[in-house]
Length: 613
Image (cartoon, rainbow, N blue to C red; front, top):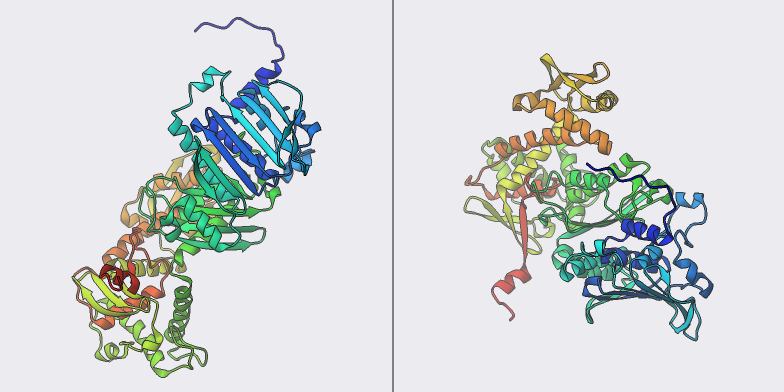
């Protein structure tokens, strides 16, 4: 390999410095669009219009009605590290704007034909304009007709950097990247009007959303009607964290992670801690290899997050990563566990309370309306019905004959206490349960539903009891790195929680002396499992692999212990299964992510038969 001749150390020219900086910030036209839109939002714009030609390679123009730039600051705006957003090192600890480095405009101007016109608020529409080409100013500031706000135009991107220009793709590909960026920004600020034209044609028009209805309308426009229909809204606060937004139902999943938007203090980010937390929240209800969809907003004290972790500002670092991870995982997981509509969740919650009371005391509660009731005082038949459902379900699991007196008392045909999943009508092909509720027809996959119920009961039992551990005849010694060995020692209590007894052995090894009996019976590769757990702990400060390994075994047990297809059920047994579904979290999906029941409303049935048309 030939060595380059030695050259003297020298200062790079300002133009070359700007072009190098542009390489870090400006990757393609979508990068320019991102920087310009973020500047508009930071300027307090409530209306932004975008005009793009040839996927942004020929022209990008962004106009806003923000506070504008005074005449005397226009020249400074195109200088490197010139910004109005921070002024001291202390400001870096509390960044609330999308931009802050002061590099975007100078970097863009260095690799394009650039112009900027701005009016900070003159009622005569008198503004000032400045232009540059390849980083060189063409003229001093000049007067121009300009409404309040700023208009930035970027032409011929990379015209003076051919090596960069040749890496651009086709117009269609670059436009797709621009569209993706526009959707991300549109979802970050629901209160901002955004209109977009491409090659002279109107492509996107987002009205300002001032209420929940408007937000859902923008969500449907950006993510599609399927997502808006198959998603649930969540909102949760804890200490200095607040998260809200939409997550897809487990039955709505994607082959790729292409419909995932996560915002921290209004900034769209990609973060491995967040991705891992959401993956864990969905791991029990989603097909393997499928990805959830979500639009989530996390609000956190700006001092607790470092947004200066990447030149393009799409990565952040949390100062309390583990705390944020658990907050996101728990919030999303709880929302998934309660996938019934809100009114049905409340009814199911009341049902759990009553069944719990009857199961433990054998007596009805002294006062308060019973579940699914019409608000009238307690009636004796409700007490019998609730207890009968419990007795029936016990018989269903054990495959024992159902006593006649239980069958009779569990009919639950009282129309005034219609439960969320209604009452059973019949069994279809020995596979499905047909039931009627207040909305119309319910169709239940009885094996899938029963499998989820048994699985949740096994998990609860497994978590509440001491896990049986099995001592290894020959302890397993693992050779590790120093950091992994330290992690094993630090997190020994976590391993103990799942029935593992691990000890550090020297600087770079550990010993596994006990493992859960459940895992030993299944022949799990313990060494591989432990190494994967340590890898997760080192990267995310958390791991769900031990829990996942246990859950996979419990899922297999639940599958074999559930009512099988072609087993004939009495109507009373079907009703017992429906009642238990209402009292079980995540009962809308089986252990493998398949739906357990679907609802067909009367309106949908009428449409099938063309009634009223």
